[in-house]
Image 1 (cartoon, rainbow, N blue to C red):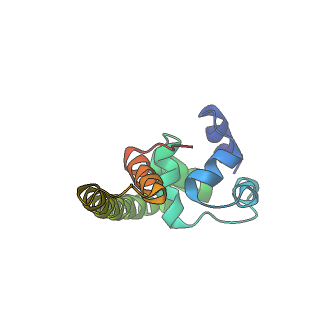
Image 2 (cartoon, rainbow, N blue to C red):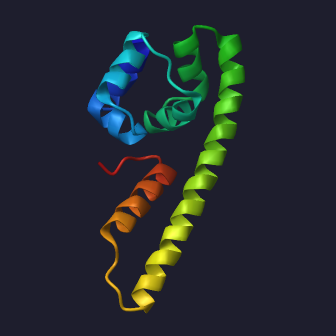
Length: 129
């Protein structure tokens, strides 16, 4: 798990940055880095893209086996595609809602704007915070 911390540091990110991006706590990230806890598959693909690491390399570092990591990498790519589609769908719905508010002359709900920003950030592979 030392490799995970090294990639995070190379990317100029703190554990708090990673926690915020993945919507977990900083102690959770610390547990991942120390090997006390496993990273859920749903977070792996986002983390790999955000740290600009291949799914294969991340899988190999976390699992210690290139054979297992190839299978994991395939699953991560499939999950990443689903997450992108989900984020795109949510962003589209929020845009529709914001457009309707504008057409009615209503102020835009700040939480919807922030949520839209998060979904766009995830689609772009960056954090806005």
